[in-house]
Image 1: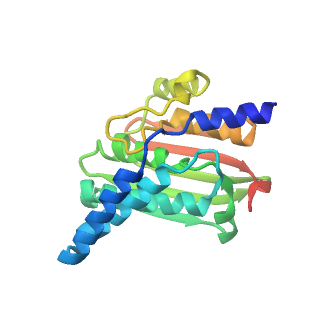
Image 2: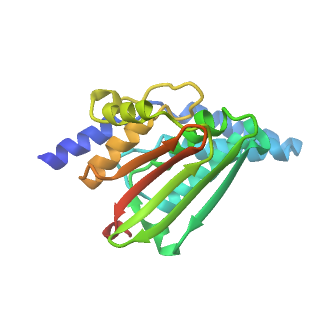
Length: 222
């Protein structure tokens, strides 16, 4: 029964967007860009299609860290059109085996969105987003770190409070975001999927940056 309840909760987090119209429109744009030799526009539309396709998948079907990283790369390329060279991205994976970590979809992208829009995007000189994955005893650790403007402790406390309530269940439009999925939603889905509350921490220093740490049981590698 609990498994069914968890599944129902996960499904209720899914967006109700019908993707067909947008997919068809994007495909038309891709074809037009190819015909006109507009390579930068083609690259942008292909990344937009990849991000959108990943965003509208069912949220109760597990993916791998590799899937999540590919989605983040496409999203970063989109943001570089907006922010230019203000955004830099680094990826450090200790062992390729870690790419097979199983998790719910749309975990890393909302965190990276938060870094882009509210962290680095608010700094005139821009900044860098680092994603790391490594082993630590019986856990696989995934870190998303930026050197943006940072957050006050009160904001972090509110994120975790919202992850306990109905607010986190809804996918809502958010200014500057492509998914409408907040970090509170990410925390809730991770807790449901891994059946533990000790899954994610946020460390931030105002004016220095933010680090999000996800701790996944090592037996969740595919």
